[in-house]
Amino acid sequence: MKQPLEDDPQLALIDAVLDDLSLRSAMYVGRRRDEGGASTFVIQTGEEGRYRLNNPDLSSDASIEAVVAEAQTHLENIIGAPVPICPRHDHALVPRATNGTLTWVCPAGQWQCPLGDYEQLTWPQLDINSLAPILSRRLHRRGAFPTVRTISVHTTDGELVADFGVTAITDELRRTLTEVAAPLPMTTHDTPDTMIRVG
Image 1 (spheres, rainbow, N blue to C red):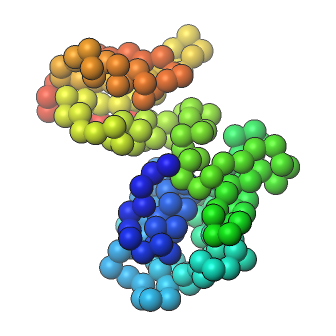
Image 2: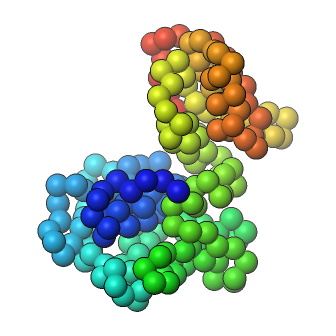
């Protein structure tokens, strides 16, 4: 599970929720760090989109579920797709809180995952347009790799393939890229030092 971005448990929960909800979006989705008071927070979408919500009461599972469901509905309307999508169906997963711990649950009862684990547990089941940014985040969590200049996922002979453009390759980097891409096969190619691209 990803580490929280804030020491404040309410904001750490919101950040983790927004991470899981925004995986299918090509636009920026996050919490505005300079807005919101003690009782509210603001979701930022793209350059101009702002939506204010009340902070959840972490002692109330119903409050956590209500705030998460409102954020979820807002982002579904903005993105135009169910989020986070169930890997077995075309519907969104439902937030369920138990003693303050949030889990994403399939409404049909066929799949679930803890908050923060959605990206890892659904890799690479999401649509192909989402995969390169997710792959970039998966690599970033392993550390800084300045020789990786481009990241893409494409279809070759009917199979998804992760492709990394690199300025230099080592055995250690090759192992890391293979692990990050798995179970997708991984390829690398030489890329100029000046190029940076994800997609």
